Image (cartoon, rainbow, N blue to C red; front, side, top):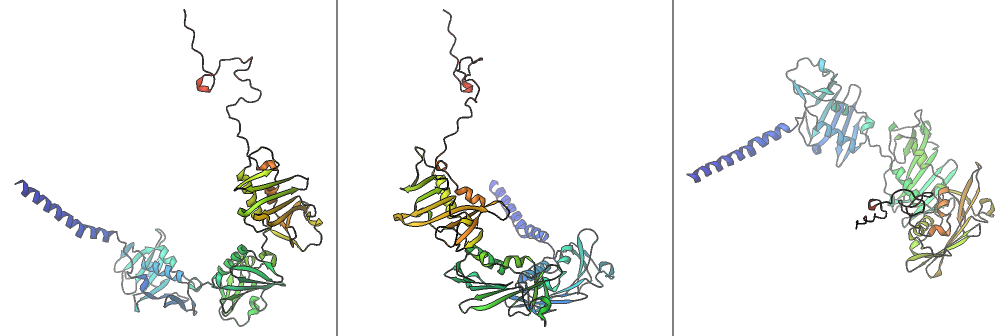
Length: 488
């Protein structure tokens, strides 16, 4: 009897579990699933048409790319197209109005836009988009083959409000940094040429200099990031209207092993402070933001490497510092530890010395003052404030940095720097000089500060004569009271 009851109980549980799994769960999933205007796979869409009262736009898939075919034949922005198709696929039905005979109140007699998509060469019924509701952030839509009016989000209606420029590819130039073999910049009376070899950049014209790698990366990044904000003309016959017959700036790239030339021409501004730009081999005249000129209009000095001295600080053995006031000290490395000669018994601070070596290595000028100066006196370097001589392993001379000061144009002092025997005088920041303007004691470890519990100056200690009051007990770190004498 007991076995039979248990068996019945198990069968009931199994039946209940089966009902939940096969009936309740699918039903819950179906109810939780949002109802959409259409159900299709966005990856299967091959064409989208947007029909407005004043314009028609069509984009078509060509292989892995998209192309705008109306109102102009041009490359399309794949991301913009993908977002638009996703918005159509996810258009949620919030409410339905059955058998509507008068479409006027919904704005569907003269729809704002007619959206038609083709999925695997099969054209789906069009979506008519009408008015937005005054409240509720919604909009009315209707399939062209049905009388039912659907209520969807106003965001869908806004997402279908497109201009041709919204769907066009706004890329002006496309390249990878390693492919750039040479860069030429011309305009405003200047000509700069830079060449890349073995991932290193050098300035070739107007004179030979080392180029700053970070500046070149930033320049190429700004060039690659060029994006149109609008399209001024697609097939202009007169470039002078845009200032492109005599551009204010021309950037020429030589790409790949065959050094194929790609030009970017920058013309004049329009009334909105936007610049006209044209790429070689492209008929289109673009409009870009005015920051483009600031980022691309570089001079030779902008590109020059302004590092004072290149060295491996782990291979230094001696740093000899001489000050204009006659003081001198030497940092010496032995067995991976640094010491300061002439400091006495103070323990050298390895952290302070390491920071000093790092500041020397990172010393970079921010402005070029002069090249090949005949006289160092005007730059305060004939008698420098600091002279820092670096020596490497096996007593190999690494170089000597001179740091000085001169009166600036505004009257305030400016700090200057150059390598001894070098060609170029640089201007450096005040804080850079301050970090290098050290005394020998700056490299000694500081004594541990006195305890905060020590008596302050002018206050008598508990043991001092004349101190009135009770001695401090154990809780206060003082001498504990002695136990009272027992009565005899």
